[in-house]
Length: 319
Image (cartoon, rainbow, N blue to C red; front, side):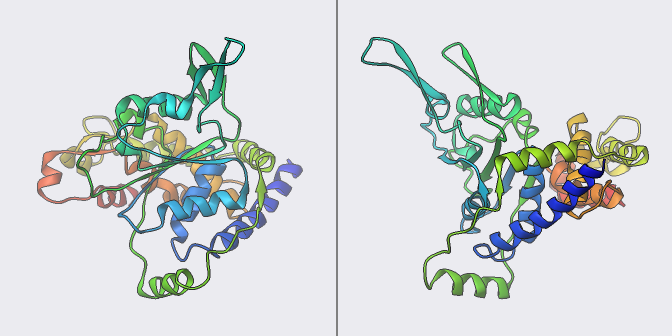
């Protein structure tokens, strides 16, 4: 137990170092960086949504530079096939089939513009995200750990896109929306990016250290009332079910499933650990709630007609 406490203290220091290093390239977006790091230490995947030019790709690249891990970027396009990401078998000089691994065989995957690729390729990524393994030519191959997918999505160019099905959205721990920078941040961005080239970032954490921190976070004790709070919060989102909030009955078609409750606790534990706490509290659950519930609750036509945003409903559920 003492060793676990030491590791959590150590993790808090490493987390501060990571944020400091990432801020050498990324101006602002602190909460977004926070959520991506929480998903990494929770062994989850993260979906980043924002209009073009908000540095979604740069953000993921900067985070990958600070982690001593294998990083691959996959640009998702309408003609991308499952074999392009998984790998394929070729006939070698000895007339034997040899498997050539695809870009999914890495630790950090940037799935750029994930909604531009057809469902067949999306579902190949789905297996990798859920099972941490892939099947090619009838053979199942384990992916190296740690493994996480950081995907980006552009919310405005919807023509020629393939919206992610609910089952795939549910695989992402967080859905994080990037907003425009403030005036001061934008001035700083322009000054930093129109002078000398971007700085090369230092490696702060290795894969072994990340796995070690992931396992100590999993072992963190959670008071029963915190688990109850998380489960009751998810129950509020389910229209027609016991414990549903009146706004869910009025504005939602359906709510979040049990995976949301699991992620709320996993995310709360990680947020607590990154703050140097040895157990999560209700504030930790609240901190991760919006990004976990945003893509798991679905509005009805009444909510659309009244321009009700999902985030507004979540804030009401949290009150």
